Amino acid sequence: MEFKQSLAQRIIIAFALMSALVAGAFAMGIVATVHLVEEKLISAGLGGDLQRLLLMDNMSEWSHRPEPDQLFYFSGGPGDFELPRDLRHLGAGFHEVFREQLSYHAMVEIVDGRHYVLLQDQSDFEERERVLFAVVLVGFVLSLALAVFLGWVLARKVMAPVVRLARQVRHRDQLLGLAPPLAPDYAADEVGELAVAFDATLGRLRQALNRERLFTSDVSHELRTPLMVLASSCELLLENPAIDQRGRAQVERIARACEEMRELVQTFLMLARAQHEAAGMSPQVTLQQVTEDLLGLWREPIEAKGLQLILEPGQPLPMRYNATLLHAVMGNLLRNALHYTDSGFIRLTLLPTGFLVEDSGVGIPEEKREAMFEPFVRGSENRGEGLGLGLSLVQRICENQGWSVSLTTREPTGCRFQVELSPISV
Image 1: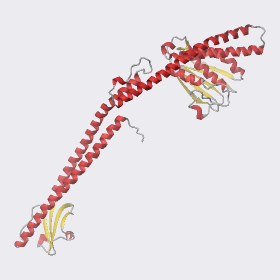
Image 2 (image 1 turned 180 degrees about the horizontal axis):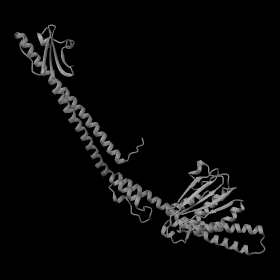
Image 3 (image 1 turned 45 degrees about the vertical axis):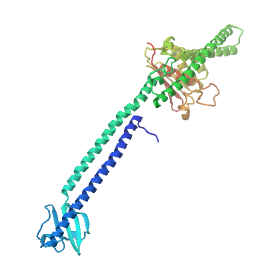
Image 4 (image 1 turned 90 degrees about the vertical axis):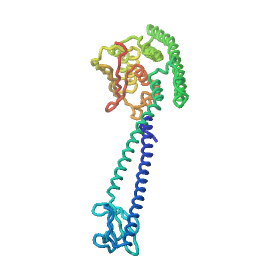
């Protein structure tokens, strides 16, 4: 069963339900017991009074009266003592009867076929019952309120270590190597076991993150040398006048790929540091500067594919951003648009604190839209190029820098990616 309440609320509810059950059982037991005992006492009293009247009837001529709150009738009685019709059906024993909107306790004796009925007004009895019900109800409500209060106090006390542990995990940077362990702060109970489990899990996460950072840093660092060799070789080949136009185009393509890979390596190196202070050491640029650089880089391949590249400059705020990471985000979105657009246009719109990249391409299937920012997910599997890492890298950079990226569809076809930027330095 799935509960939507918090654990503290469940403790309070459990206390309230337990109190309601116990107090309700006691209340019903008290009321039933008092009612039964009082009926037994009244029945015994009425029976004694009736027997006294019967003895007096046998001893002398009928000339006595019952108690002021009692009425006495018998078959063939003189005047007011004659048994009324509405009481003639009563059998021997104790009864409760209602006459003229009043209720009475009745005791009936049958002697030699003659009915003797003694009635006693039970207004006092009903008043005592009402007082008893009121007292029991007040006691029930007070016990329920006390149970809720005690449950709240106990829930705070029981949940205090859990809340403290959650705050420590949330506010401490437990993934840092120097983060202190959590378990020594807690007793050897269930919460302590939870803290030990947190320490073990966080320790494994630290090791995995360290391995990832070292791997990313080492690989990115080692790739710099062959990339420099490739870039230098491309420059030398382009200076060679003997190379034909087709060969020159291929070399320029290789040089462009090397430059993209160099920027990608730099991006991975920066993300491997995973610290804003280290990332802040990168050159800071405005949105317009990055736009000019990337349009110069991507205009030729976009137009060579027969697409129209549209720039809507807008009015971006004069803020500065991490040059490497902003290049990577905007460049990957432009590359993605080029890859999935066969005809039409690619539009780059600058916003006050971000930008839009729109295209008229094949779009992204609805079932894949939510997973597009995961690694190795591509919008169209029948396109052989690319590993599906570009949008994943965009998402990772945005999370690292406190930016946001969202994907929506265009009508009738195409995609719209919107990136909201928050500057690290101004």
